[in-house]
Each structure stands twice: as structure tokens, then as C-alpha cells.
Amino acid sequence: MINQSIKYPDSLLKFLQKEELEIISKLFNVKDLSVIDVEKELSKALLPVGGLLQKKLTYSQILDKLIRKKNLPENANDSVQEKEEKILLYKFKKFVENLSPEEKAKFDSEIQKYTSENGISKGQVLSVGAISTLTIANLSGFGLYLMASTIVGGLTSILGITLPFVFYTSMSSVLSIITGPVGWTVGLGYIAYSFRNDNFESASNKILNYTKSVKNTIVGNVEHTMLAVSFITSCRIILKEENLKRKQSFVQNRQNLLDKAKELKSDNFELLNKIEQANNTLEQNKIDIKNLEEKSFKIEVEIRRINNFINQTSF
Image 1 (cartoon, one colour):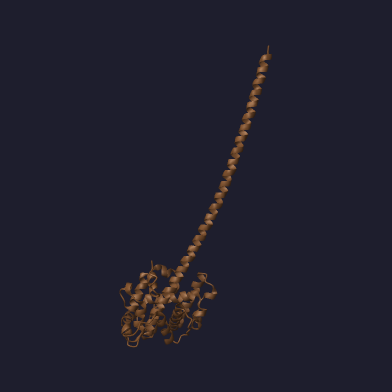
Image 2 (cartoon, rainbow, N blue to C red; image 1 turned 180 degrees about the horizontal axis):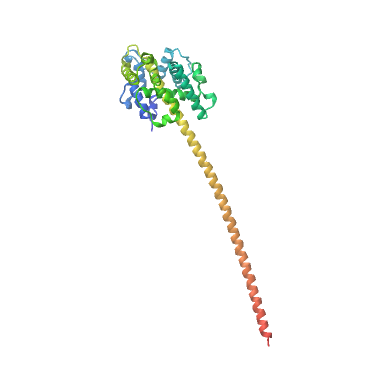
């Protein structure tokens, strides 16, 4: 039973797999996640001098601060989820900008292939060429899922974490790009250009060391906080998509069971009718047998009468 007093995004941690929690642990450089306060850790990363002698920001305030820092469109009526998705979209756009023309073409090709094979409507297909003009308002559910998978896949790659096989089976061809040589630039994003030509091991070591030093930043680290928020947002979106698929599966299974129950009920009704017909036939047969027995008895009586008459009149 989940403690209802735990607020989002801390409440999200209860639903994450150990590999995803490991990423959270490395991003915040916190070993014991059972006592982690996500708002507090994000505040430490974002505020100057690790938030020393400063009031902890709420999660919504952290999102607002990040949005303003990047001059993203603001709306006073935006929900926490909408603010998160604006930041995620920003990070995803930066990822695409970092790709070479060849990488963009490959990425786009795999997206088109995936959507075609999985029956995703053309209205939901996310084109690399159109990403720069995307807004949250015109972003499809699949577009959000793709961005979330990209961030999670890239971060797991650069941090040396292997996600469960089930994660890769849904978008293996698309994720193969972001978890390969190109992939680690997703996780780095903001510092990718400083060592874009490093090999994987060197890049991975650098970002791991980088995460450990974030809390000591004098001016606060906007980019690292955005990356952490993007990962949290991505986990929420993927979890929601998984729950939706699970719900659809349950609904389909329920419908299959209802159809089967209806079929069995129909078969049972038909069988009962046959039994009733058989019983009616049996009763009629009993009546017919009784009538035949009565006729047979009458015939026997008549035969005896005739026999007696013959015997009496014979000489």
C-alpha cells in the first residue's frame, strides 16, 4: 500500500524498476533512495552553493525556474505534467540538434519503420525534420513516448546500466541508435560538445565524475537539473504508457472471457434444449410403449378367446 501522503515526484519512485532507480541514484549521487527527497536534491543541484542557507524549492517552483532559464513558453495554468513535458521537449530538441545529418536520417528511418510496423497512425508519427517546430500542444502520445524512451535509453547507456529486456522489445530498432555510439550524447546533452570525440568509456567516466560534483557548483547547475527532471518525466510517461497497454490488455482479456462465457451460455442453452427434447421423446416413447402393451394385451385376450372357441367347437 502506497503512502498517499508522499507527493510527486517522490511517489513515482515506488513504481520504478531497480535499473531506473539506479539512474536516479547516480544522477543525485545518493546511495539510499529509501530516504531521498527529490525536491531537496533538485534544489541542491539548481540553487547556488548547493542550496546552502536557502529555502528548499517545491517541484513546481523548480520547473518554473528551469522554464524561465531557458526562455520556454510559460502559462500560469500549466499543470506540473505540462511543465515537465515542456522541459522534456526542450531536451529532446537539443538531442536532435546534436545528431549529424546521417544520424538524423537513420533515426528518422527507424521511427518511420517502427510506427508503420506497429500500426501507429500518420497523425502521430514524429518526423525528425518537424521536431524543431513541435510544441506540447501538437505533440502526440507516441511523440511523448519516443522522447521519454530516448532520454531513458541514452542515460542508461552512458551510465552503464542495462535495462530489462522487456524495455527494449517495444522499440529495439529505435533505441539501438540512442544506446549506440550516438546514444551517449543524449545523456550528456549539455556537455556533449566538450568531448564528443571521446570513446564510450572515457565519456562515461566523465559524466559520472560530473554528477558527483554538481552539488558543489557555486552558481547552481540548470542543465543537470533539467536532465534529472527530464528523466523523472520520462519515467512517468513510460510508466503511464505501460499501464495503458496493461489496461488495454486486461480489457481485451475481459472481453475475450465475456465472449467465451456468452458462447458457453449459448452452448449450455442448446444442450438443455436437446435434453428437454430427448426427455419429451422419452416420455412419448413411454406412452407409445404403454399403448403397444395395451394393444398387445388385447390381441392376446382375443387370441385366447378364439382358441377357446375353436377348442369348444372341435369334434
